Length: 264
Image 1 (tube, rainbow, N blue to C red):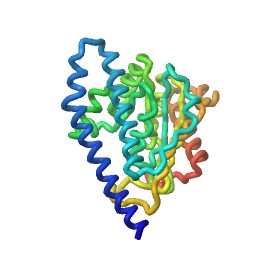
Image 2: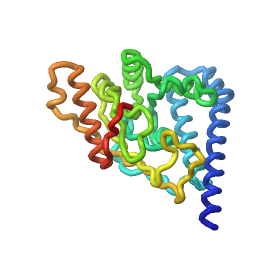
Image 3: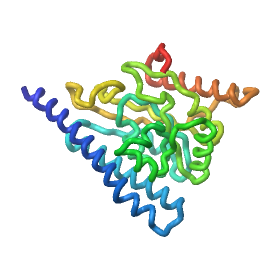
Image 4: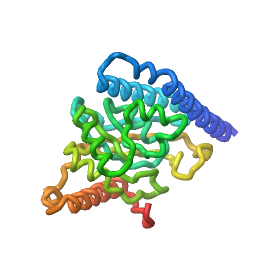
């Protein structure tokens, strides 16, 4: 009976957390970011302030998830291997809905590449635009925006799978992360995301709460050394294809997951 009651509370608390998230997004869109927009400061400073504000809001959301109980433990490993002041390209697997919130809650001055459709979301669209997050559009525009962000000293974060991972597996990587890594010439830092027991997966309703409390972990790995044989490929498309395969195999090995057999 106690376990059943605790699970019911976690379900209600999860719903409450997402209500807070939606309300917070509206407040930022309607009140906070418009004030930031009219401040008489340089555009770069406004963008950095927007990213810092998003980081604080995401960190608060993760705290609320822990305070109310949907997440029992949120741990971050290996972040000390990432040197402050240098832009990186962070890549991560994507097991749960809140992965991006968790990752950006611990990274300063980090821009995120997000689905273009989210910019039309009533709760998130205004926030994404004001924070200068990068829409995942056609390749030339995407690369240009990424290069601009890196030139301004901001890191980038992308999920190479493009959407959440299937249960017990990993999707085929798109080549966007490999293109960005080669075009922007930034160190690539893999993040291994773990959510145990699984929850908030692709196609899973938010109220389908696991029987046990969730342990959420971000494990930052050392920057990847891109093999010289990839850099020595005779054409850029060959380099991109080889680097994408290198990323894919790295994650399969580190996570011990099987590659999804159907196209993403």
